[in-house]
Length: 474
Image (cartoon, rainbow, N blue to C red; front, top):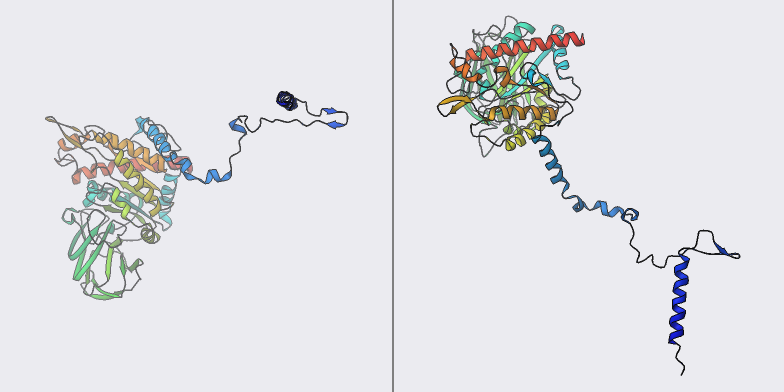
């Protein structure tokens, strides 16, 4: 039999050459009337360039492809923060202005505009309210008492505003006299197995049978001696009877209506010259919670002191936004102030990342509690401790103040540098050494005299800001 293997191999080789040649046939070539089609017999094994490969839509639905993006984003944020680069829409002001102006990082640069517009509307019957969240630096109305009284002289108002049901520092207050008996007190900083809904000032108060409260005007400040109206904030699942009396000493009985766990308000309006004494008693307090009382007298400016001893800022996240918005719907705050940081400062602090993360979440939470409202961050003030045998500003103070400025920029808030307003490094030592003392020998807290000095600094600053606003917008 004849062997045709060699001929077969030759024919196959010629066919392969012919097919490969078809790849190089120019487009539109023909043999006679027969068009030649370009072919690429190696297309299945030829390596395609990545940019020509179309990925199916299903690939982008697989989130595991992006599992490292959060890590990358966090690393980028850390880099920006560590380099002190811009994290908000506006750069920080010139450091020479720290403590001398209210820094406006609001996204529309309108925070102070809205506030001073509200102040100018007081003459038309407007009430302007400021909610001041703070720590022990402002408890007992130190600082805020003189600030409130002076602003009421300038802008109007009569009364201390929102007052708590109980207080750890009632005996130190100069703005009003305060007595209370038989209450259970819950707060955002007090550990409790059962915590009821917390109110606007970070507290909730549960009366025992026969619980009472007395508020009495004091003579120290000009504008908190008397008031013409008061409100009681409460929740009650059933109707609750209470008794109250003013300086006429006539006991009156009224009812707090059931509110099905929504916020309830009971209001009384009197006449000028007003009330200097208010007593409240709760003989049947079952299923009743109180949140505070307001003592006011019509149009003007009121600073509500929501100081919480030990508050670093983080515990405010226990406030329920939906519940707090019920308070704000009644009070209509024009400015929300947050002043914390004192409890985070130490002399050995070398990493504030944990505190920065806590305040970042708190700032976001406040925006949810008071949507659309102007928020002012007041930095930590100076605090001193022993460095060897000498007192000096604690290392963490400038770092925390700077971090609070960065977060104010990030969230679009106003910012006031209290540390530099006081005088910067060593200012607390000067406050302690001053005669009379402007600060206590713990080198942390102000005396009443120091509160007055710092309060007047704030008044002067606000007046300058108001004058700048009037020149620019009026």
